[in-house]
Amino acid sequence: MSQAPAGPGPRRRTVLAAALTPLAAAGCAEEERPRNPRPGPEVAKDALVMIIRHAEKPSAGDTGEDDEGNEDPGFLAIRGRRRAQELPALFAPSRGAGLPRPEAVFAAGGKAGAPARCRQTVETLATALHTQVRTEFAVGAEQALARAVLAARMPVLVCWEHTGMPRLIRALGAHELLGLPAAWPDRFDLVWMFTRRRGVWTFRELPQHLLSGDA
Image (tube, rainbow, N blue to C red; front, side):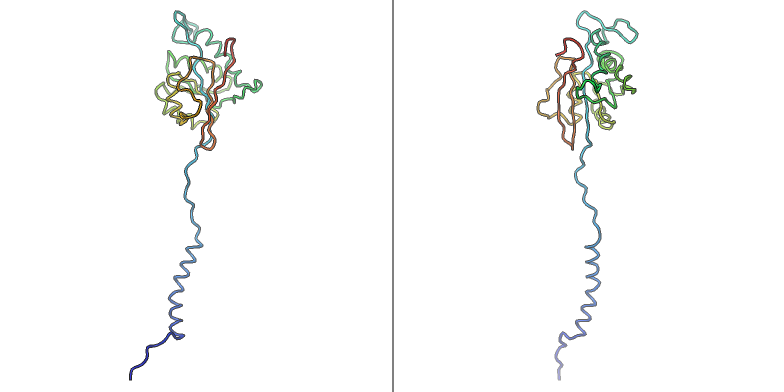
């Protein structure tokens, strides 16, 4: 005589519950285990970079002066040396010009021509700020310069040769700003200020107003 198959009696339910208990516990443990959040896109640190052109160079037929006072067309003209002497006043809080005092000062590296004029332009300012002029980057090394600028303590002032300005601004990542000129104008009395907040750059052009005749 054949027997009917065992129904879902108490013993079968007990065995099934015992088999499912470890799986349920594992599931709860997985839900309770803290999960590390996925890293979001890295936001670049805030930055404030001010860029100026070197001060006035000798015009055709004129000459400049080197650091020893010798005539040399590869250095600043007399008016350029006057601008360099007045430059610290541009960052004095009493002027209310809205220009913060730089924590780091960069100038193009080189012994003559535009690099020498860049260094001459900011030497008096660096002395007033009790800092050194950083001249380890030559014109053409704007990518490396931009990395050093953004790694420096802010605010930063850069005195550069005007034809290298677009390369520097592109290296900073600030080249697509509304109102930014495609090239530096034929002037020595401007400050270009680039401010980065929450990864977004803004641009302002400011006059120096240091010498008579400045626009």
